[in-house]
Length: 385
Image (tube, rainbow, N blue to C red; front, top):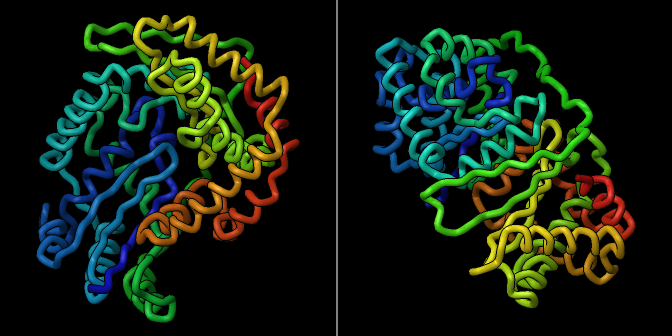
């Protein structure tokens, strides 16, 4: 059956939580499935299930998004439901307090009982000295436990408005058929004054920080290092495309530099990789990570990573490495078009983090234009302890 995916992205995430209220964006994501002025609590999900649809939502540092996948003849129904809860959400203590406890339990299961998640959380808190990215998306436990119904409603009233949201529909639909539906259900909702995203900025970083976590739950050691890095929207943005190419060279599969050197040739690691987050609204991160092999000390593993970074900064990447990395990245962009949601998600992420549709559409051209010198320059700009 022909299907469509409706996604409503709000240009607000956990980094926009008020001070002392971490987790309110994530809590509200849960509460949006409660009742409205015309819909009983829980009825939204029941209606969607009866019509063969699937739904979910997610919150990140910069975004909260809600999506449904339905048969195309049910699109009008889900647009009506989504428009209703954009403006008519009803919350009481009976709704909020139990759901707040659910989120606290979610944090306990996913973070507090997971040493790897705790380490990631502490590393972010150490990396960002001032910026709200240092707070976990799910919130600090002590602040979560103090959130109130009014906190949730205040966040909802301040941020959930059509002029702060982006509608993306992908699948078996055309713009000509979609526009009248969008105007019918979202058009009548009045715009509200939404303040500019004003976030604390990072001061200059003068020193490296080291975080160590020990836990009896850990059977295998894990190591990671995060660097502040420019994103497509913040910092030295000209480096963003080059960093994507660099990441493919360093960590793009079993033939990448890190895996080939540490796992295959030196045989000192079970895994070794890197990742680049260039989609942040503010400064992003470039991360190295890995797991030492049996009997390999953490110091030796870290020294091996440092040696790879020193080799990169000293000799740079080769022209052939850049060519191969760009070829793989461009092939991945073509394969992404086979997915109902992947393209829509790329656009939603871009539009809620300061980019444009044109940035998404021309991404392959920018990747194709990256040069060896640009990759080497980006590495030298970011990999500074």
